[in-house]
Length: 136
Image: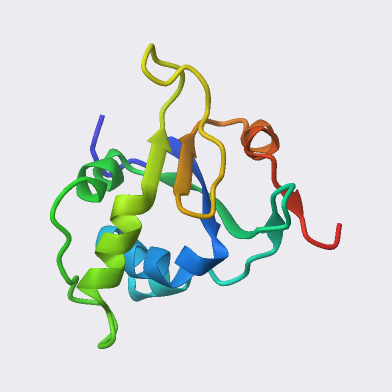
């Protein structure tokens, strides 16, 4: 199977205060300048009323390789791309591929962490995150 195939469903919750950093990270691991606008709206919330931006998309195995490496400015990155912001997001990521002995359950959302969950059941992932859509 080729590394460029989109074979994983990734659902990501980004706390409102980390959205800018997450967009810089998205450019560093993404495929186009439009990745700079991945997290635009904080229209989900947890039980405490903290706001989150939520995204679910298909990704390639390469994303996970890039996500854990030294970040660099991509040729298509905007002029104001920030290594520091991208690294801030990278350090805040809690990625879950499924139950393991070390992490048997999906991580909860937190205002200090970006939570990424790999799995096809998006509705179940969002429910376990404890997020509800703002205004509905």
